[in-house]
Image 1 (cartoon, rainbow, N blue to C red):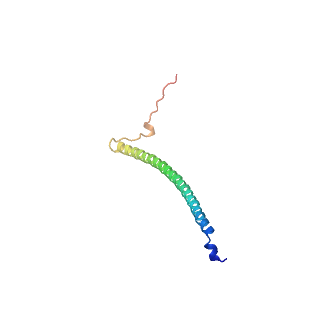
Image 2: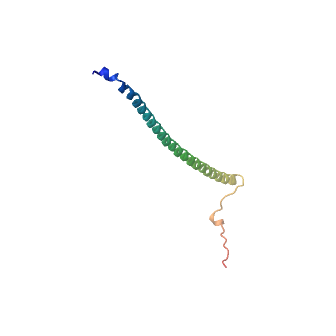
Image 3: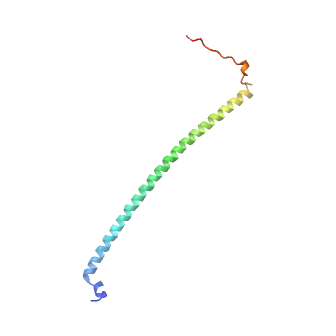
Length: 102
């Protein structure tokens, strides 16, 4: 009995195809599970990046408001000096008023 006769025997042919199909199905199932796992990991990472972006957007908004506030304060001060000729009095012209305690 040679190799050629073993390969062409009906019992080997009847078992090869189902075993091959089962191996392919199991391999395909493992590949699907791996892809779903990788997708979930990437999606979780995406959600974390989106959350970080939202936090940074909020912080950026706060910084813009702070910048506008400081800019407005300087503008008000310069307009008061230029337009209304206002100034801070020297300490000799400053009077402190107190209310009597009961």
